[in-house]
Image 1 (cartoon, rainbow, N blue to C red):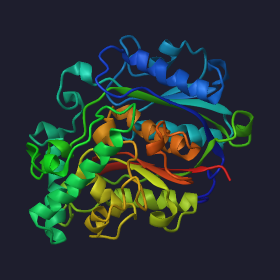
Image 2 (image 1 turned 120 degrees about the horizontal axis):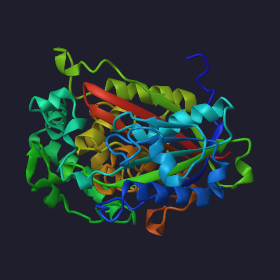
Image 3 (image 1 turned 180 degrees about the horizontal axis):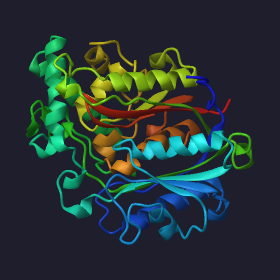
Image 4 (image 1 turned 30 degrees about the horizontal axis):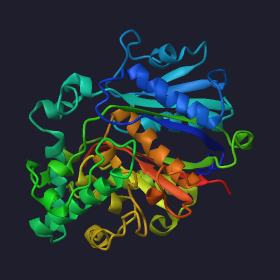
Length: 400
């Protein structure tokens, strides 16, 4: 990379908004876009006329007349004659709107921009994602839980965990995230569960049970970014973007006889790129919190190791020690993550940034959720499954 630090501290987040995630049958996609956007604008103390460019992210949703274009943002917001780009990058769609917007601000093309991610999934009636979303592999009989069950059993075998030990590690992740989600007013599933409930839940794809899988959800989230040079005009507690890492491979893991399903090379590389941009040497010690892609509990466990939070094979030890609890050394998914907050695909990455933004500002809604003096956070949504991953890592930090 020619200049890995070119973006560091050049772009500020000055406003964010997030709808309640859940079964939002009472709201249209436009309703959620408007709600999240105007919360972000009010937070930033700017108006729609101040927005010079915008990015809208969605995987499978759209409005009736807007098709798949930027009109799905300009129509509900009544934006006039500004550039609007529609982004789609699987489960990393939302955070990719922020990545593209940050690059444009870094280049000096715009001073103030808007990013919105949304998804309206519950109206489809599907228990999973709409059929046309799926990769051809799923049309051949595979499922998302089935694909993620493969690395779970492989990880157990490779690191010498009995099935019971492995399932307990995954169950503790589910218990942690439900506990955090129960304290998050905008989360979909605001309910704590016990370890016994997680272990004895109906099996979806062994070893993954009901509480190992995230929910299908509606929601939207929005961010207002600006040049760091002018951020202090809007607020003192703005949050700076430190860097992004995006690393996608050929997606041939399942065709590679040597591929080990217990690893995430793309996620590891995306983390390395983001750490280099942000100047992070030891993420386990330097990060104050992380929001990671727990579409399934095994995903979160593998991400601990791929992102350098745990040494290879040591994730269970850290889970048992409570290292990733909200009171632990590196709190992960302090808002409940995908597991409890829900996963409206296009909104998820922006929601992750929303949580980090609020935590760094000391405004995490409820006192029992607020971390003590957080300085640096990581957000990482990713599409696919091991062997077929598309991750994006973002690092955000408090102003110096």
